[in-house]
Structure formats: structure tokens, C-alpha cells
Length: 257
Ligand SMILES: [Zn+2]
Image (cartoon, rainbow, N blue to C red; front, side, top):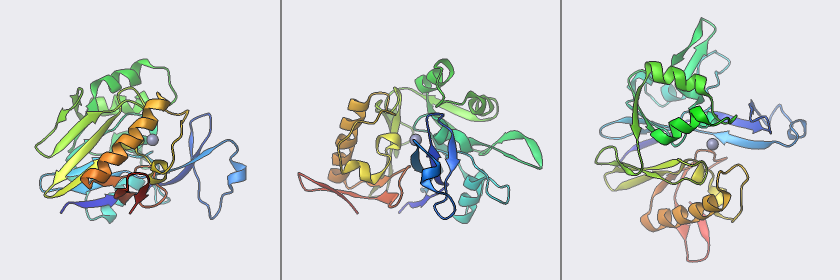
């Protein structure tokens, strides 16, 4: 059985500026953050027979000890950042790649967070990040990754290994991809921002943050049904709770367990 860890980075508010501001319900008040969405962020770490896999990388905030929260969470799970062999990226929006680099007060320059990993990126998504004038992308991070990281561009649908497959979905952004990881009898599905929160499966809605809201809505339903059919373990990147769960479907209604 694969070991799966949800690496919770925290809750954040986001307004039209697309800046993510840490939000701690114990000390902050939502009324002080007008016209904001509140978003939880958690990358995932999966230990399989072959690899230590990180899926998406969070925002890249440091904790009060000036350590990258992502690094700290990986250590708490019992690994070192250098142990990560594969970084799977669903897409390159800022909230999914911020933790690929880090900076501390003891060294001022930004450094690559995972020096021994291959980075799996859709090539078209990379090109969009550099050509589209969008606040959702941050090419400074990508420049550092390009200079110091071992990027493996992929195109379309395919298999990375016998056990890891990737599929283009579009919907959230044009070249968004999802991953399915097989480990023994278990199938682990990462839907990125196509299946970001378990609650989103329970109602139909159009989201204006999606590139193609209608398609994204239909994809949520399609993947939720597949996940229920196949008994996939689903990883929800923006979940408030139950980030690792399964989906049930009785023909009419979904449930999360
Ligand atoms: Zn996201």
C-alpha cells in the first residue's frame, strides 16, 4: 500500500488581486477580507515502491521558524526534501508551484526546493505561462526551475511509468492535467483544480475562475463518477477537510467517505 500524506500549508484569502494572504480563523476575521475566496492549500506526498512523489507544490510560504512549510511538512512525514524523486504538476498557476523554490533570511536568493527530482509539466502549459499576461502565473519561479531543475515536458495523454498516467483535461486552464497512480490494488487519483474540493462534487455550479466553466463543471461530474466506479482514492488539493477520500455514487447522489 502506498503511503499518502496531505501536506497542509494552511488557509488563505484571495481577492481580485489574486494575492494569497494567510488566513487563520483563530486570529483573523473574514469581514476584514472583503470580496475574497477562502482557499485551503495542500500538496500531497506519496511513497510508492519506486518513487517519493510530490503532487503540486503549494504557495511557498515559510513558517515562523523561517523554514519552507512544504519542507517542514515533508520532514514531519519522515522524509527529506532530497528524497523527492518526482514532482507532478497539474498546471502552473501560482498556488500550485510557489513551493518549488524557497528563500530564507540566511540566504537572500531563491533556491530550488527539490534538487533530486524530475518535474513533470505539460509543455503547452509551460508555453501559456510565458505568453499569457495573467496574474495566475509567475515566471520568476519557472525561470529558476528551468535553470536548476530537471524538467520533463509531456504532451497530451500518456504514461510516465507503468504505474503513473497523465491525462489532459482542460477546463480549469487549457492544458490542465490529472494523474492516476497505481500501487498494488490501489488507484490514487489527483484531479488538481478539476476536483479541488470534495464539496464541489455535491453540487453543480459554474465557477468564473475556470478557463472553461461549463467544461470544468462537466469534468467534475465525469471524474467523480469514474472515481466512484473504479474505487479511486482521491486527493483534493483545496479541501477544507477530508483531503484524502473516496467517492460513492448511488445513481443520483454522490457522497464522500
Ligand atoms: Zn488551485
